[in-house]
Image (cartoon, rainbow, N blue to C red; front, side, top):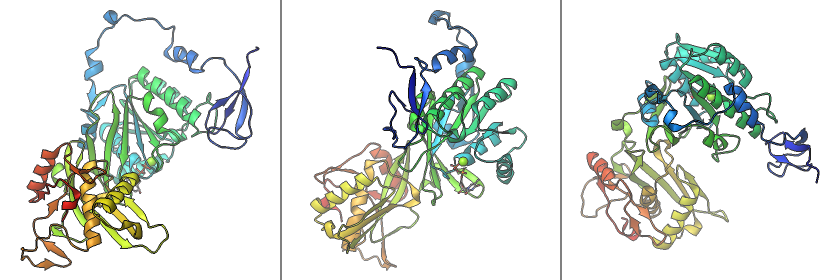
Length: 447
Ligand code: TYD
Ligand code: MG
């Protein structure tokens, strides 16, 4: 059989097909398949050699000189929480994907980084004036802060090659608006994003510059980029939080040079993102036990955080009762609702259930299960938790002032409560706040 010389490439998602079709079967876009010459081998094959300037040689480990600086050359971000997430700081020549939902504060934090350490900010989305305005408003050092307005990998390559070694840090904001000549598809399409990232990674390694590539993620967490790029880069950071809340959490999903179990916690203020100290992590300021409220201790990275979970369980008039969870995973919430119905005997099939977490924290910790159930139970029974009939403390407002119980535990399908990791740490945190962990074996004991 004669080998086909052309392939059809979707200009929207970048997938290749051997036959033409009216609709791309990968992304569903209509009329997006374009006929292009097949190169017979991956386009990247040649270019690696070219960009590194020469023919590849096999290297013997024994002959590879270990430059001690290549490992120890770590630059501090001068932002405490940022350093904590990275391990020690930024490793020279490393590439970091900085992902998060639009508007969460990616540009703000990276502007602060360049404003402290100095470097180049490649502005693909915003104008130089907008960024300069932010630099001044946040009171950052404008001296070492250079801005390069560009949407093209070739321009970035050209500029950085010319100013060889001028910058230690380069921020590219964002990969969704950076394109390169030899990839198919429009800027922002999968093929463009992949190719541009590949080229930027090559460039960073060659120039030994630490590069931060911003990538937007959608609400569902992937689409259009970051997930596809994780394997290409050294470090993947996710910046998350509720846009309306002030708390932001920086997590390392992958880290070739440091831990992945640490998180950085920031507060978005009018002066930009500020570090939040461990002592200030208590998000429960009210000491009264309220109807529909339960306190729990989460562990973010390695640090305990006390948060309040609120539930509203109200009779439903809809054919399908509503289930709304803010800060709690939807499937986990559904499961806990079912456990509440079975093990706590709450007739939730005729009740709407709303659950939310204070401080805009997204819970990714089964240790909060018990608190979610306790809050639902309290709302359903219209009774504050931890109410002790023999106690004669006066009711303050609608709540009860006394030692607030703290609910920590993973709940099984059968309603059994299990201890979770960092139990002792959570217990200590609760005690430090003058509260006690509730120790029960089954959700039926919630009171
Ligand atoms: P931004 O960094 O532009 O988000 P991203 O790059 O992730 O899309 O942040 C945008 C939001 O941050 C915007 O809603 C305003 C807010 N913000 C502050 O509250 N304080 C500040 O000092 C700055 C710079 C932004
Ligand atoms: Mg931005």
